[in-house]
Image 1 (tube, rainbow, N blue to C red):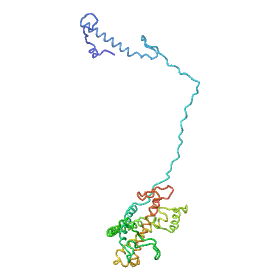
Image 2 (cartoon, one colour):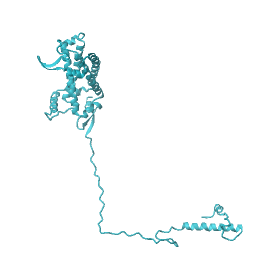
Image 3 (cartoon, one colour):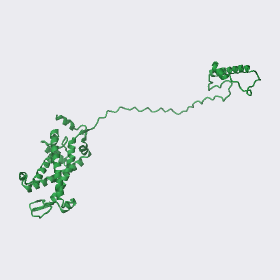
Image 4 (cartoon, one colour):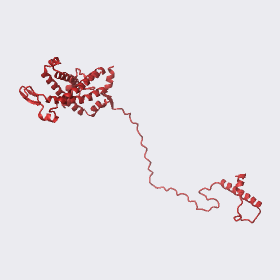
Length: 337
């Protein structure tokens, strides 16, 4: 490191007389002495910086310090050296193939019509019972229990007992029943008409209408449900028993509308009433169709519960979880063209 003018300006600072160890000299001599001393100090610092650092094993010359102690040598024992276990080799796994898939079972329109029809039909049956309570036979011998189950003069049971009407709170609600019955009858008719149109134009009728094998399959399915047989016939969307039942319900709904109109307007629609066998016969037919709807509803709900959540979910979301090997309903729909 050389002495630049800037360094000289930093070094040329006259110390106070109290710290100066020499005798009193002139100011010029003091300046020369300061410059020489500063230059010698800078040269010593450069030499010190250029010297290598003393190693840890040997102390610097002239420096006093503790003697270097070498690390202890590792001791050997007679115990055998245990080798580390080999790392496990991960074997490649075979590709996993899907065992199930989602299949589109019910279109959105059918699901809407199904869930609309459920409360409508329930309201129709409830309001019809309120109307029926007001009826009696011609001789007024059996009020509120016109229809019976029996043979000839022998009667097994009459519809309905007194406790049934009390539980329904039916007495003297005939006008309320008429209002609900006629209002929901229009919804029932329109909903059923749209359902028939949709199944025809969408091609879904192919899943519903029975074929020549449906009767045999219905018997086989019934025997299976009664645990009298282990054979279950193959099916696509519906089995043979379901096809017969769902098609029958369509005709039952149509019959309920026709018999209901014959009872409601026996004079204006006298030709319909006559075709049905007269007013009294039209009432019987209307009542028997209502009992048929009640029986269908009971069996249908029981079958849905036995079929499980997957079947119920398909009527809500439209999708059904099926094994991969079963035929696809969506592929069958596409095959219709």
